[in-house]
Amino acid sequence: MTRSTRSDTRRNARVRCAIYTRKSSEEGLDQEFNSLLAQREACEAFITSQRHEGWVCLRTGYDDGGLSGATMGRPALQWLLADITAERVDIVVVYKIDRLTRSLADFAKIVEILDARSASFVSVTQQFNTTTSMGRLTLNVLLSFAQFEREVIGERIRDKIAASKQRGMWMGGVPPLGYRVQDRKLVIIDSEAELVRSIFRCYAELGSVRLLKADLEAGGIKSKSWTSVAGRVIGGKPFSRGALYLMLRNRTYRGEIVHKGQSHPGEHPPIIDPPLWDAVRMRLAGNTAERKAGARSHQPSLLAGMLSDAEGNRMTPSYAVKKGTRYRYYVSRPLITQDHREGSTALRIPAAEIEPLVTSRVRQWLLDPGGIYQSTRFADPSAQRRLIARAAEIGKSWTELPRTRQRAFLTTLIDRIDVGAHQIDIHLRPTRLAALLDVATPLPSASDDEPQILSEPIRLRRTGREITMRIDGTDPFATAKPDARLIKLLIRARRFNATLLDSDGVPFAALAKRQGVSPSYFTRLVRLSYLAPDITEAILDGRQPPDLTADKLLALSRLPLGWHKQWTVLGFA
Image 1 (spheres, rainbow, N blue to C red):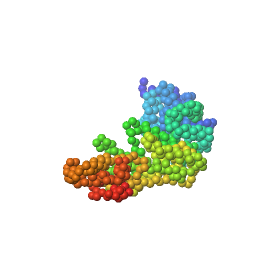
Image 2 (cartoon, rainbow, N blue to C red; image 1 turned 120 degrees about the horizontal axis):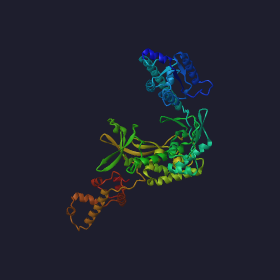
Image 3 (cartoon, one colour; image 1 turned 135 degrees about the vertical axis):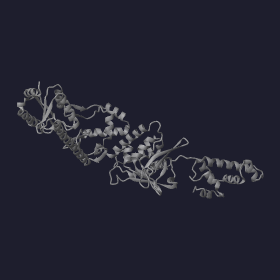
């Protein structure tokens, strides 16, 4: 058969035409005459105009309403492609090429399926012949613009959503438990809001999501249920642990809208007040710290993320290992990033010095009823008394708390800690104390957001290129640390003195020779046996001044015999 004969046979054959329609949104689909019907009417008119070519319109309707052209996961499109593969369709007719797809990659897949079955497609408003290279080029160019348009529309929608959320607007979705949507805004449902508050209060008391889940199940409390667009009922089941974690971290309950990790003040009213939110956050942070610490981390850095030096640089936890012993530090960021300048006040502070200093000062505040009373005022005097009593309990039992609990407490209570040239300033948020200790919320006042500053004197000294810290203040809670060399020196002085008293006139030089020391050393040591009893007792208890060492005591050329003068000379007074 010649090519001319084949052409005449095909021209006289029946050409089965399938009409495909699509609309991105569901808006207007419920109307009597909608966009899908308009597209089909135009396509049917075009097929009728090609009746002389043998074109016949199939009755099957391939309609995708409310579906984007960015994906091939559309029911009607998949049905159409299956019919093409089964050779039930010869030509696909669309109103416009972007109705079929807006993706070049998807278009290539569709053309491959059409070519495999010797099928083609026609756009009513754009005349193409996909059997020629020029036709394919034109289609690719148009599809490139269609894909570009889709991406621009997506960027515009994302920008609009971001701008709206920054203004605190609710941008759709399933509202969380406690809210409903009215006029595109979140409105509180009182009954559900009270359930949310009870869940938060229960977790703040139990401190465990597992126990919280068991408590809710025992009470028969279930999650919020709603009906989807397809009519499927979702939710209405017992809370899972994952759902409870998400609820306890959902900042919508604080009256905020979150977008890409950033929270913004929302237009809707909050359900959870700040003290209760902070109490729950502290519990969650404490549990997270315990899980991350693991069995090998026995000393988490209590003040991580809170310290700043005089130049405003964050101080990061660090450590060094010397002879198998691990020493922890807080180091100014420029010392870590090698961005340290000459004359800079970048610090390197031993954790063993600054952590007891900060915790000691906070404990003093907790044990000060007057300070607690001035910082937090309650309408109910009994609540005020409970807060003072609970604060005192925490202050007294501080050393018995796990370090992870101590860190969670400090993280919530402390805004920041500034290490200055002569003192450390601890910025507290006293109003958070009520939530931490599970006491009623204090009365609101103009100074609620004002931190209370606790100060402690220190001295900084330069060591090479770094600056280290010395503490001037004494820690009333510090454990005594006797100096072994000082105590050994006092014991030896008493022994030398006893040898002298029993010498029966033996010269000093001979006594010193018997003890294996020089006469001058023997004399200086015997003199130490006449220290004031209070001074001796303080050294044995470890309560001597920080700079009183064995070398300093031996270096004294003359030790006053008067006990009062000894106190002054040795730095006790």
